[in-house]
Image (cartoon, rainbow, N blue to C red; front, side):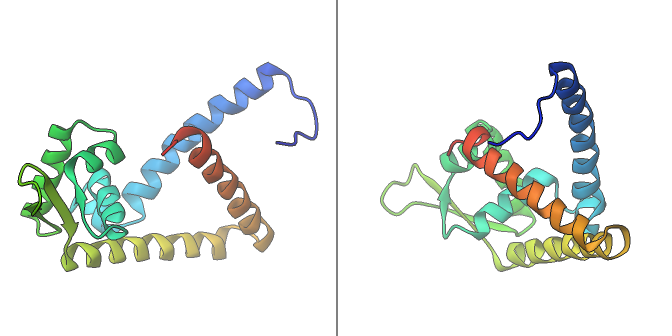
Length: 158
């Protein structure tokens, strides 16, 4: 990592404090306000997160869901129960081991993920067009790419 100018610990700490507050506010905004589905409470963010993960997997077992979500298997089971009742996922016992419960996303679940993602893209597009210059948009994307790489390599060691 290249740092162009030295900064004092107090300045870095103050920036970290402000960024922590901003991240919390952005999370609420992006998760609750960017999608009509999420703001109406059709699904919670953890449910949406799980659906987006399942969309990239053919089938996954409950232990893998619990690990991905950072929950206990019991909590993951509750999450899957609610999604199954809504028709967004299907669960079945594994053929080779009936103790394993396998979960996959349904077409209805995939359609929901697509709608929510499109809501988010539309809102971000509006933000980019009406509130940021082209250069600010590029800088924002560059910064978020760096943050994502940091999370991928440091925070979410998978």
